[in-house]
Length: 65
Image (cartoon, rainbow, N blue to C red):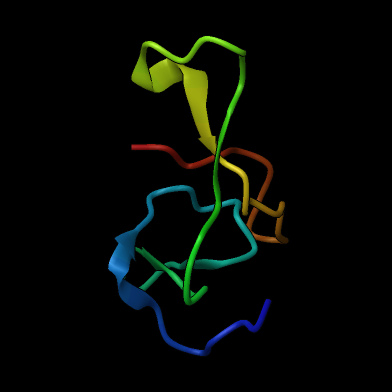
């Protein structure tokens, strides 16, 4: 996956600790993301995740807003 220098305005992100987070724009620097699930029977938003997440050096807290 290629990391871009600017955020992708089509992918909003508020997770500061992700390696792909573009802090100044509140978006993701990837061209696309993979959405995954955390259980077999997905029926709620809480059962999904950004499978493209990679922990970066932006700090230890997720920064979720």
